[in-house]
Length: 224
Image 1 (cartoon, helix red, strand yellow):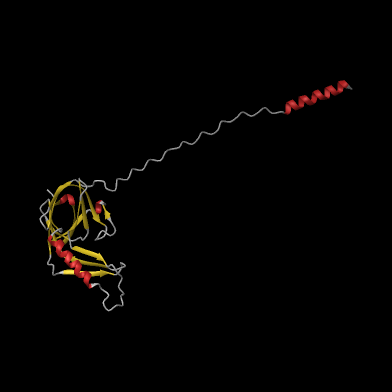
Image 2 (cartoon, one colour):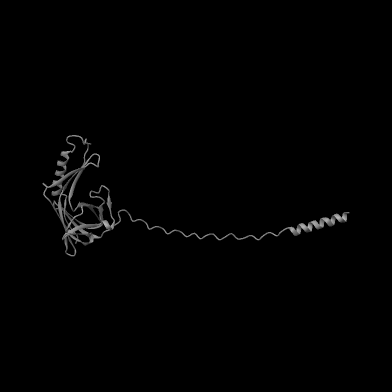
């Protein structure tokens, strides 16, 4: 009996040993995907980065002259720079009319500009009710004649304001076509009033134009 039990035990052990599967070989993990770094974006140029290289002489109505090297040119977004300034290349051109045709002239083609103010008796004054309080504007008509480096001439027709920045950081701001004087009223006026307009503000602005036409208004620009 003992011999039989031993045989049975031995047979079972062999069967268990036979059924046991060898461990499967470990598989290597898949290679990690190569990470390609995104190219770095080009840094934005500083807001006051130079975009011009020209010598300029600016004379005002009182005979004062400012000469120097201009490193930056900007143009107002709107006529009065209420919306700020732009330095987009497509905007830094002067629109001129010659022989009934208009064309855009870059500052690099400008040789000289002469600005002649019109009579102070012919000033247009309006108010803009889109502002609260209203904005008042009196504008003196001017004629700006431009001469390009190739000898051609024309009359400036765009009303935007210009700002030139010199190497020392000083600036000169001016209009070439029409010179305005603006001021917002310090009080709101009822439009149903018998006299909704602030007539005294028109007088103030007209006086300012008279003073600027004799002193700070730019009357000539020379680009050697």
